[in-house]
Length: 178
Image (cartoon, rainbow, N blue to C red; front, side, top):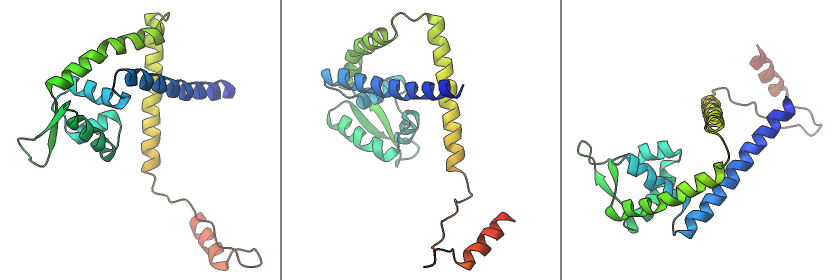
């Protein structure tokens, strides 16, 4: 069981990396990037998202997304509009040019999905999808737990010239144990 789990996690990591590299390459052939494609596709489905909401959905840090959005605005693919309730908040909308670009990428997405998943039954794809969603949710939960852990890791004591830990360190360790 241990070996199977190790191999499965390795395959997940390697498959994800290879798929990302493949999609990057194919998007580049069409003058885009995987990141740009993801933003444009998400905004087509949910125009008017805030930058923070979009970053959350794409699982990116807002600061990382800002540079990508700046490039998409410069290229004329999207625009930022002030929120009617809070002028500090910027909402994101595709331009006509942005809609055209994402529509032109649709056949490429269909081709990639077909090529990668060809030969798998609907049931097999649903089973794998369900398993991946469960794994993803579990990882998010584990990562959240790790981020919220309040117990700091113990620090290593400085050693005295003789190689012993100072007496004050021994007292600290004893207090931590009780």
